[in-house]
Length: 134
Image 1: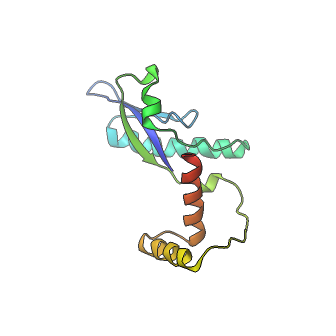
Image 2: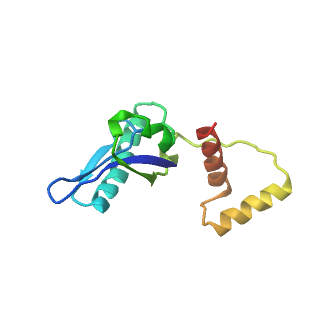
Image 3: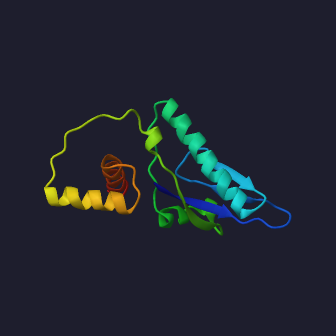
């Protein structure tokens, strides 16, 4: 899942700060932009795991355009952080899905070409994308 990040640029005196607005409590900083980004990935996983352990819904990302309207982030830079949320979505359940053979072959070709773990992983990610942008 691609989450927007708000970046408060640092300098020789101040660290670079990163906030992931859609993930409560996902705030970090680092001496370099690269370090701040790496720490943002870590804090995102920590916060998502905490939400999952509390039985709360995993927040879906909103658009950067929506977040830029927030005066709290005026003058900040923006980027995207890619977080695999599947470990926090709960126990997997088996379902029976009926699809045309042509679509199944296209899915399988896509899965193979893009190194995706499985057909199920592809379908779960496609569903999350659709639900996020619904």
